[in-house]
Every structure is written in C-alpha cells, then in structure tokens.
Amino acid sequence: QVQLVESGGGWVQPGGSLRLTCAASGSISSGNTMGWDRQIPGKEREMVARISASGGTSYVDSVKGRFTISRDNAKVYLVMNDLNPDDTAVYYCYYWYYETFWGQGTQVTVSS
Image 1: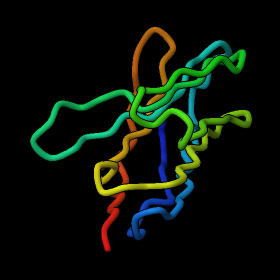
Image 2: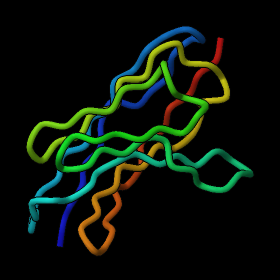
Image 3: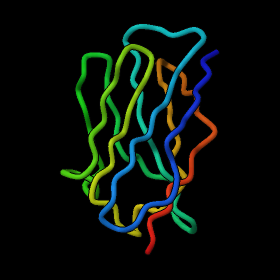
Image 4: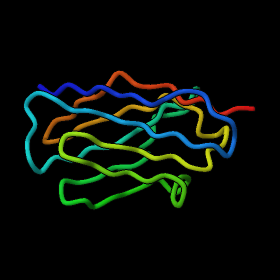
C-alpha cells in the first residue's frame, strides 16, 4: 500500500501561482510514476501532468508553459503559474507502479 498526502491548494486570483505538494509513504517502489489529475465539476477527470522515475514529464496541452512538475524522492510537486478560472478543480495526486494509488484531493480555486 502507498499513502499519498497532498497540500498546497487554496484560492488565488487569476494570474496568480500556487505550488501543490504530494508526499508518498508506504511500500514505495523504484521505477514508479507520479502525477496529478484534476476533476473539474461537470467534466471528466483529466491528466494534468506526470513524471516518471527517470524524470520524463508529460502535460496536458492546456497547462503547457504554465505548470511544472518535479519530484524529489517520494515527493512530487506541481508549480502552477498564470492560473486562470478554467484551472479551478480538485487536484489529485497519484502514484503508479503496476497499480494506482490516489491522494484525497486538494481544491484549487481561481477567481477574482
């Protein structure tokens, strides 16, 4: 089992920035992939960003150039710049190594 604890969500005005952090603990395996999905009300959950154990990254087109994912051992970070109201969602951290574990989610609200 892997436990994930997220932090860093909150409210921010358009154009602002936030940094999400996810700490993994438990049966961590090398070679895992970690990442962030988000759930926008009324829409399907979408992959936002992911990072492999070797550091390879992938982003959804709508956040490229604005969001940056990074990792440090069993922690993964998502720096979100130039936020806009369309980024308002619950953000979920996940860990994958042949099975997926999810965090509890953290709310990000972008509004004026």
